[in-house]
Length: 399
Image 1 (spheres, rainbow, N blue to C red):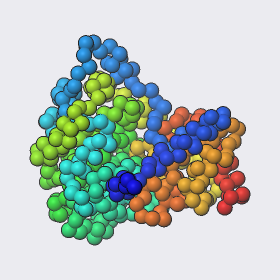
Image 2: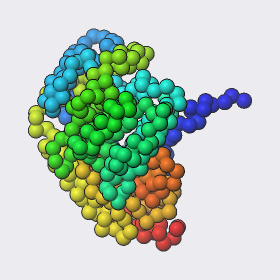
Image 3: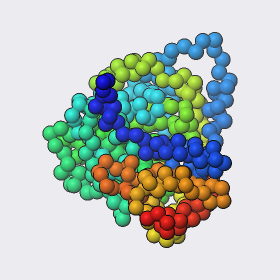
């Protein structure tokens, strides 16, 4: 009998997408589903980006450069300079989404059996990338009672072994919305330098910090130029998730040359989406002001609605557009599936992401869900109305 690879067996399913068949079945029955399970904003992609693709004029859609279009990389240098990061365009490699950037980085930096430390809860696909690269994830757990603040760096340092090769953070954080302070980043940078580790920083939500200035970039840490690998993407910044354009940014020349070999193996990133990404860099400087204000108002609404529910607790996230809530339920996986299979209120239901998928430690997150506040406030209110009624039914009939 043919055997599936161990790697394939260990590859975890997406906790964000695994319930899609149940949502599709609900829709087929005429039930409206409010999608709070996935970070797909309903804010329109900027017209400037769409027009760049619509108005393109060429005879052949040919292969591009494996590192991405030079014009785009050079223009990104200007974008980064505008937020205080000095780079050369050769230190930027365009990828098929931020996901490919992190996968390439793992493949280039780790050998099978190496370890990477990640604060949990973490973006679920980090576990998948680690499985693909044969890397073991070692976690340090942050707690909902502290708003998922970074655990003391001394506790993280205790997790370092001879097999540890790197640390991953997402800042602002998906799924918690936590924003790492300058002091925390500097402490992590010092630890990375001390133990000579790679420091992978996912900065996809850089512009979305609601309580202060844009968070410090890992690329502005001193003494760790060869250690830092920054992952970026247009998906969330410009509401262009389907474009699948990201970037791997590092000043480590040996690493960028190694990643280039992986990039050559997949030939080139998508041409049309690079056109859109390049055009986005011409958006006015105040483009994010309105978008950021809208997300902040959505955050305030969803957090207040959640905390007004009996037995529900949700800390207020400082950035990104996600929140984790603790619910009075026995099993988030069962509850989220039940919402789609067996529940509706006024012809609608809500789709959430079970919290367990964002933890590597067994048993954690069983009474937690992640909510993405990417819908307009009317839809958020309707979704919260559904959740209130669902918790009444679930707690009464099914626990």
